[in-house]
Length: 303
Image 1 (cartoon, rainbow, N blue to C red):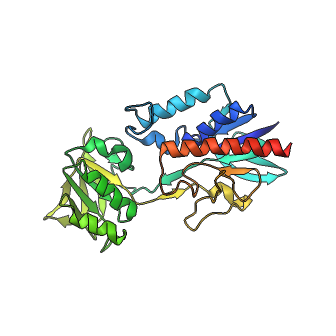
Image 2: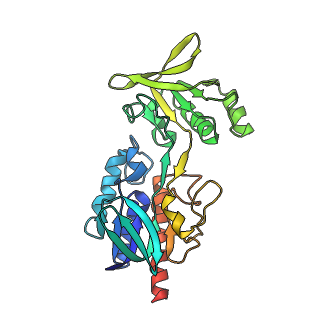
Image 3: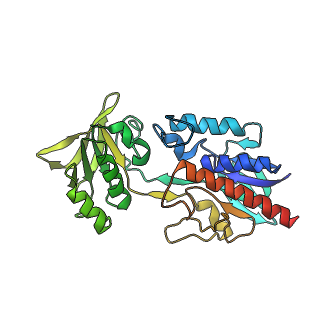
């Protein structure tokens, strides 16, 4: 059997693409290893229309409810993607063929890989200040990282938190000079340079981190929240055999129709150059919708 479309990725971009593709009466299979993608990790989401407050997992479950019955859904890990006339997608469970592909495999947050990081995710540890800043009103929090994203996250958190620390492993943070000036002028923000976080501590919720150097004569820093902002990695390993063009940071190059340099191959969501500066559930979903429409037009013209 040859599908009209295979969608790789079950985050907001992939699931929205499935919704729209089904409305075009395309024969679709949606393949993903982790339902909801990185969006499901958000402790709470309060910036998605129609939901005043919802957990990331709950919101992604709503997405999944809507596509159930509309398209084939396979909870499988894709291990190979190639083209042999049709596109050929191989998982551990089987082989699938299609006339077109939308890849929406997103990005993965870089992790510190320290004790307590995984255990306290959603219990003080977060990878998204935009998503979770409001939950730390009048609290003491810290950002780990020294890039522009870390600086912007710190400035956002300072609007809510009582105190914000930036912990960075090098001598000087590498954010834009304007951002650095804004950080230095904000009396809520303190930068701790040349320091690493080596563990997250707590009971039911995190309450401190351990540093590899003393700060104020103590290696333990009391915190209500730890935001890890050390970058993310686009999940583009599957695109290599097709020679899909990437930008210098590894994101899939797409045009306004979400088309790549390979006919019939589209990309949507955080994996793309259209989203890599503003990674939000709503923008990922919009790209999924555009990609599905583009596939429909591609197949219509091909036929």
